[in-house]
Image (cartoon, one colour):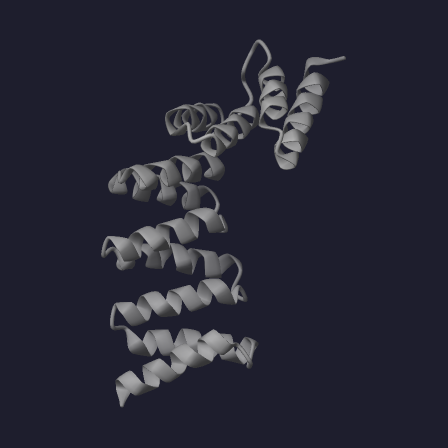
Length: 190
């Protein structure tokens, strides 16, 4: 078999065993997929996932960094950010979430990780551009629009929040969370 075919087969087997919850077998096949040259990012992402599930955050971080060195991507940056968030490394987590979203504005793990971090550390303003970037790509993703409305409301930008909620309700008239937040905004304005 060719090296590329070996890589693909072993990577797929690693993913299958990971999905089935057999971490040892998955790890074995990801290591085989890495092969002698170790030029592929995907096995490192799989090994990072295994390390996270085992609670080995330092090992996971090493794999995420190696994956990012081989192929800068949103998944490796988001993985690093999640570990940094867990460790309380707030500025680094913000940076890596931002890097993930620069690569892929639709990475919901990075987007909602950033929003969660922003609320916890009084940096809600920092999340707004990323929410808007997502909506520029997918304007009918009401969960993201609702999050944007909530951020705007938190920042006291009530009219902008109201506009976002109105857009949701035009697209989805029965959206209960949007109706409830609209009512809260109405009460604040009264």
